[in-house]
Length: 122
Figure 1 (cartoon, rainbow, N blue to C red):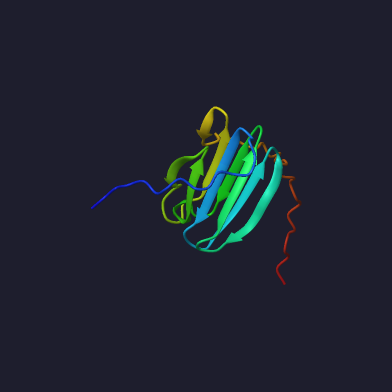
Figure 2: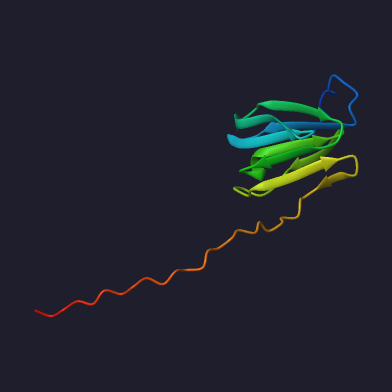
């Protein structure tokens, strides 16, 4: 059995330093943000291919990493995760990375004491 790498996809139509080529292998929801602007958000169908190029960053957020194969700057990355694994990746000139989640502080209010009603027996 051969473990040959799939052929490299057709290059994008410009010379931006960041090139991301995605191929949906299954029905999948994804959002792609290029240089801070949402370029795609929705469902991709099996066989759909998407090409994105940017100057600073490309971010991918998907509901199923196993459903998406990717090439970054003409390098085959393969499937981006396991079945049903939520994947969030950031692509920059330094390469691909998984953003570190940062906690969001949410204010909590102090519970107020409420008067207790007394029930009189009849």
